[in-house]
Length: 432
Image (tube, rainbow, N blue to C red; front, top):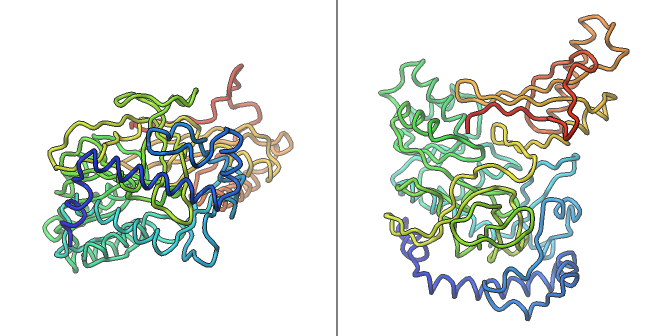
C-alpha cells in the first residue's frame, strides 16, 4: 500500500504533472465560478472569465483570496457544494472572535488522508508501524489529518490527542509506538519526560512528524538526539485542508508540496507580482481537487522559497523551505494561531484600554506566553486580592477567545512604552 503514494503520483515527470495541473485547474475554476458567487464577483471585478484560464500559465490572472475574505464570507459564502454534501468542518481562530470555517466532502477527506499518508510513508512508515498521534483532535486539523493518513498506510493508529503525558508514555511503552505525530514543542517535552523517568530503553520510536508551529534546526537536532529518531517537518493550513499540504522526505532539505492537489506560487507580498523560482516571498496556494472549499490563489502570509532542485528521494514535486516568517502579525504559539487584535478585542470587552504587550519566549523547548495589560487608573488603588482576581478573569476571557492559556500581568497605567510609530505589541524572543 505504501508504495502507491510515492510511485503513482510523487515521481510523476514534470511535463505530465503540469498537464494534470492544467486540466484540474481549468475544471476547478469553472466549479468555483458556477458555485461560489463571492469569488465569481471578484473575478468579474478583475475582468476574468473561466474561458481565460486555460492552464497554470494563466493562474496569475485570477484574484487573490485572503483571510479577510474568509471572515467576510463566513460561514457559507465560499462553500462550493450543497451543505448536504459536506460531512465535516474544521476551524481556525479568527481575529475578532469570528472563526474561519473550512468544509469537507467525503471526497475531500479521502484526498486529505492520501496527502497525510504520503507524509507518513516519506518518514518511513508502513503497515508494520504503530503511529502515535498526539496532535489535538476536534476542530483543529492536526489530529484528524494524521489519523486518516495513518489508516491509509495501514498503521496501527493510536489517536492519543494531546496532553496527559503519563498516559502517552504508558501507551508508547506498552504498545511499542514507532512513529510520533505532534507539535515539536510537545515532542521535546515528551523527550524530557522519557529521560526523567528513565524510559529510554523501553521506547522504540524511529521517526517523528512534527508541525503546526515554528521550530529551529537546533530544536530538530535536540529532539532527534533525545528520542533517537529522525524528525520530519509537515506543513498545512486549515483553509487548504490541514497538515499534508507539504512534508519532508529523508533528505530533510525542504518539504515536498503535493502538487497534484495544490499549485504553489511565490509572490511579492506588497505588489502581488509572481516571483521566479528561488525567490523569497509570500506563499500562495490554489487547491485544484477540493470540492467543498476550493480556495483559489489563497495568500498564506508565510514567507518562504520554492525549489525544484532534484531530490535524492526520487520525488519530483516542488519543495518549500520552512516558513521564514510572516507578512502579517499572526503568531503561532504551541500550535495555535494567535492575533494581537484578538487580545485587543478581549481587553476592550473587559473594559480595559488597548495598551498591552505580548511576550513570547521558548523555555526548555516549550513556548511561554505572557500578556502585559495596563490597569485602568481607578484600579491603581485596588487591593492585591482584587488585582489578582482581575488577572484571573482576563486569563479566562483570553483562553475563551484564543483557545490557549496565557499568563496575564496587570501593570501600572502608562508603564508600557509608547512608540511614535506603530506600537510594538509583540516581543517574540523565540529562536526560530
